[in-house]
Length: 298
Image (tube, rainbow, N blue to C red; front, top):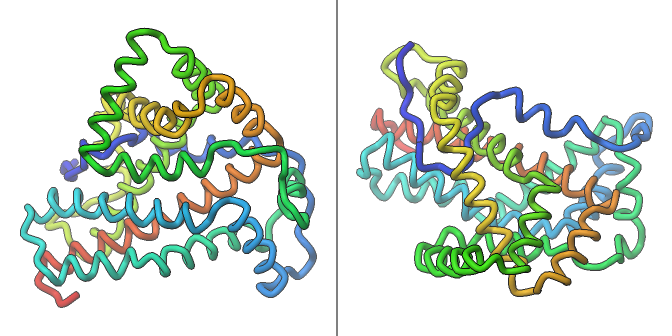
């Protein structure tokens, strides 16, 4: 097997493809989608879920994180000599309006021609869920902060200090992380993104040797322990940035809201849609990288 260059510094890559599929096995009661569902019937539902799930904010985060991922992969595959055409292509791929439209379409795919989780009923009414905030907006904002080195360093120092003194707010955050296990989802998401990049790169004949997704997955598996630890740190920093300012009592209230059936179902659907968008952007970036390396105009 020829080794494929994998971004070891990309946080949260899983060691097995099967983990991604298992994450969504626990879904609630379902009801069949309307017979003959068409786009004009699905679009209002998708739009409502997009709004309830802070779709614009999530799309902004997807764009920022995916753009950073593209930069890292370019450094690995192209050695830092990308050029203006590459930067322009990456900017085009991650255009904010385009990413927002891709996310809305991905949500539509989740409710088009498939069974719909009845737990989402509370999200589709006139007012949506009104049981209180679950902190998701703060989590999304924190994800952008993690892409800024200065803020990341300051945040890590604060969390380290709170860790050393067993601050009640960090204890509450750790309990919520244990309850929802976002680390597994983060690992699966990033593994799929790396595999999508490799697939796109291979489709555009970027490799000078035969390769397959199994080769890439095998390379990722060699890094499983390190990457699991990195994913754990990333999630802990993310949730700490989001929830620590609230205090332990507010963290517990947010956890209770997040535990509601409607919120669980909404987050699961949005994460599946986000996974689809991240994989699409990564594959497009992989194809663009291969074309750039071959000197093909972008």
